[in-house]
Image 1 (cartoon, one colour):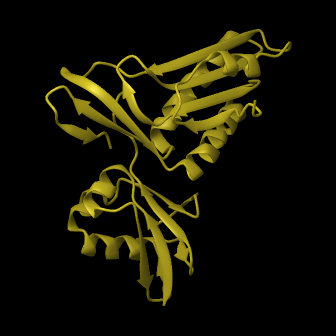
Image 2: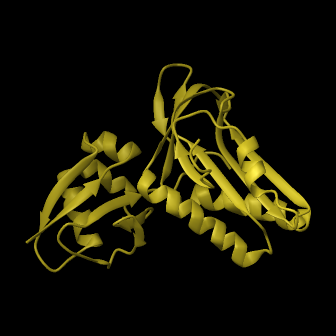
Amino acid sequence: MSEFQPFTITGHALEPAPLVAYAQTPGDGAVVTFTGVARNHFGGRSTAFLVYEAYAEMAVPVLAQIAEEARARWPIGRVAVHHRVGQLAIGETAVIIVVAAPHRHEAFEAAEFIMDRIKAIAPIWKQEHWADGEAEWKE
Amino acid sequence: MITVHVRFFAGQRDIAGRAEQALSLAEPASVGELWAQLVAAYPRLAGYTGRMLYAVNQEFAQLATPLKDGDEVAFIPPVSGGR
């Protein structure tokens, strides 16, 4: 098995367990997991499936940079972020963020902050494929 | 002249019809001058003007960032989908 990478972009299905196992250490009493899932609707319109694309060489270091931004704001422990790319069926996991901290408030707040920052600056794009056959990049 | 490598992603790749392109620029050249040249080549890219982040060699940059021979440049629209 290859060494666990806390920040990755992958075409494979995402599983939270390895991220949690990595993030959880004896000094941290809270481990928050956020899972972003491919949803079957957007703005009242039915979605058939999603396609995610990344500028992977840049996105991986940006995910690490965002974790450091969170660490500058809250006293948090380990952070792991895995993001999926390629075609995702409805119900599949697009992103998993795991944040450990001594106490839960910091872990929850940092996890939300990290997701917001991914949306704002990470070079990762989502294409909505609508049930009627049209497709559009959300950008 | 310098040659830079532009990476196109998502909607920009659809407009350009390609994932990457080598472009020659007169020196001195900046990210903003490269973007102007791209918009001239692909007018539909104009819709992205002013609402992007910029990357040179996989690091965030500015419109005024100078370019040198061999740089890799990407124009990154923020993801607006979802909340």
